Length: 204
Image (cartoon, rainbow, N blue to C red; front, side, top):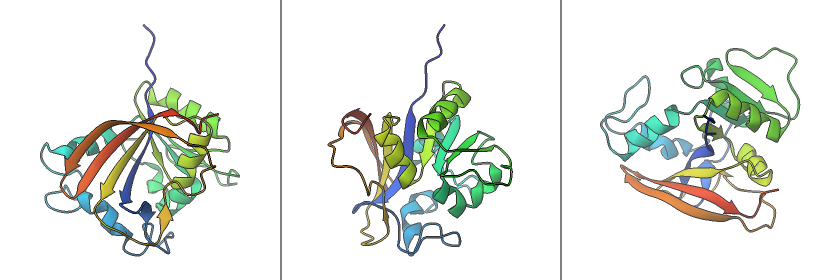
């Protein structure tokens, strides 16, 4: 029986005006000024303090469980560094493939591998995921993978706030129209979960 490949999908919390961080994000403030508001749906109310899983069986909890069921992670180097490399373990020991312009001299720790080619990073992540979905982090990584035709779907967690400044998810896209098909819309507590399929354009 042929193993079915999982979907490569960014999971991004985003403001209504398109920002995934506030301004002045960096290693000591990964989400920037006021950017923590974007992840409030993972901290408000009854949330496990260790796993950050929303309690119960509502939309927020189900979406969180889906994300944690992914079998590999692809991330941009900037996001990886700002997150402190997740101490070498993003979740459940799954391999993390870091897109970078240059591989650091120091050997990777934990489950981390540095990769300089977009298609190679995604191919390795798909194989490592063993049929499960692949989670993607980082605006630059998402843009690079979209341009290379390596994104299957896009998962957005739209938070009802306008940040006005910060880092946008799809800044720097070429002037190619990218068609998306809405697969799912679920309203959670303080957030709207949207899943799109990339159906045409922007893929080479």
